[in-house]
Image (cartoon, rainbow, N blue to C red; front, top):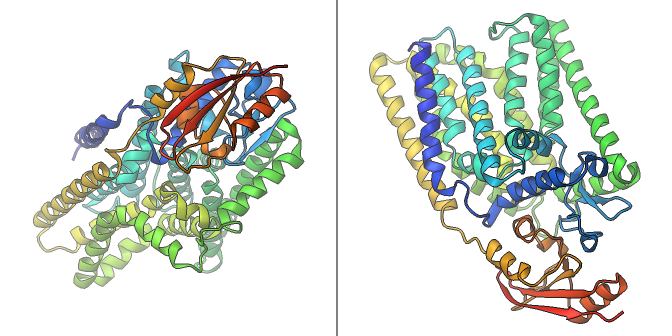
Length: 516
């Protein structure tokens, strides 16, 4: 196909994916992982409403009222400043700052629609970069365009990608373009692909992509480590260009160090380095599973059951790549081996990074399906290699192309069905609950939550989907008397107490005057 026709196909596929997601576009926040977008949007709005001299673009999640101070509503992941404002430190800064810059460029006040448009743009960018990577890896084969379009479709139509790249914006979603960009530039520097740029620009792009990735999500650190390991392996075991391989490893270390120094310096401005390290190492213990009570360690069946459940969403694309490679291998092992070797470096880097992520942050991985999004990169590369091998080893290539097109179409149909089944029908009680609360509460009131119907909430149960509509921080208490005592101790004129069920329905709201 010509470049124009290829661009038309890619844009058409992307627009089709947008059409699939249209029923969930700009809808009220619901359950599941939409706390990710709610959290991102809440911080963006607070940045827009609060002087930068207060937050210094740290990840603020405390609302400006005096009675909202000293309340940690986000899973003990925050550090408080001396004024009682809490800042999230469990995610690097660009995970929030990048969408904020985009939103402020087009909107005076960030909103959900703008955030979702931003996420869709990132999705298109990630798919396009993956298309370029696979196209260049297979450029000497006739199936190059078909293989790269297949890889594009894998990252575009995987059910979790359809959802997270619109409705649940998080650093793991935003880091994938940086990951693929690092794979492209490293392959270019190793001479495995061609790019229309000078070699010096390739070195700069590698450092730039790795640094920005490490400033966006912790998974990028595993990518940097795996790239360093693979580069050293190529230098020592395969006698590749040792100078290039060693320099790639050194630049990975430079990018990681620069990102860590920047993050530590920025977050230490909140309340000192000691408070930051105490919180971040506490979160690491939780994500690694050392503090887990659910038994989701690497030695338990529950962990592998969770992994199987999450990766089952990609089963059709895994089958596509494996079946294509198996049929090609049976026909011509030598040709199939050459194609696999062409794609081996980026596949090894991406797969090793995912494996390290799943091993080190085992508890986090077993609980959050968005952590498997990184696995789509090696799956897409593998699918591209499989399509290339099957096409090139087929006696009737026209028939092979038709079969590949049919198989891809079936994969997309299965993914679409999985997407609607998993995400389309979920309750969204948060705005209704917020309306009931906001009808009573005043700016100077203290806002308290008590569980109803056997539900006992803590502060972290006041999730971002509720907070962003209430526009207040909420303190969970066990009784009305506890709420009155806290309100009196903080000179609040009233304590507004609402009773909430486990599915976030407000059953009753009462305002209690506090005598001082």
